[in-house]
Amino acid sequence: MTTARGAALLTAGVLALAGCSTTVAGTASPATGGGPPLGDTRVADYAAGQSHVPGVVDYDESPPVGGPHASAWADCTGSVYDVDVRHENAVHSLEHGAVWITYDPDALTDDEIATLAELVEGVPHRMMSPYEGLGAPVSIQAWNHQLTVESADDPRLAQFADTLTMDPANTPEPGATCENPAFLDDPETA
Image (cartoon, rainbow, N blue to C red; front, side, top):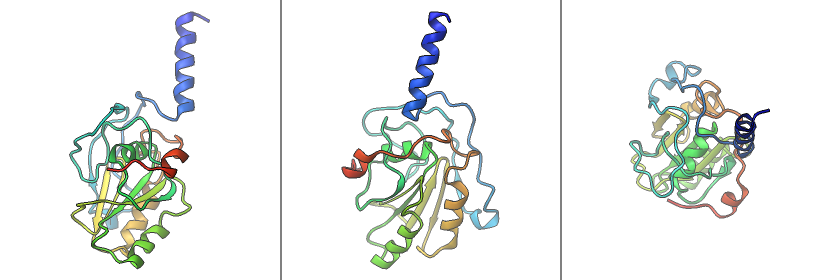
């Protein structure tokens, strides 16, 4: 094996073990599994292989649905956060196939927040957090996809989550891990 080829294989192996790369083939496409009930989903066009960047990113969407992001992902192993997690970490989770439910903590009751948590708790590649200044009671995101709704009981939330959680047609890095216990224990905040 040549030295260059060996180095390339070693680099690819390290990136695979890390669960992330910056050169992932493929592109995301609009969700199709939900049909008309997901017709209000906004679709962006972030290519796979976005850069890892330090610091704050000025995203076009709020909450963001793709783009450059932190090198570490937010734990998305059915994680329900009680803080507004750092958006750059959440976007990295979206790249790994996660669905991120956000909500305006001033617009929902505790019972409505618990209803949202039922969609997330114990479900791999899902996470939830409050989001300051959301502009809607609830917003749900996946890579390149976003749906805002007025109620935690809206059936489109479950349809969106079921369609886009780890959906290989819309996930830049299918199969990447969502585990990050250090983030879960001490989440970085927005």
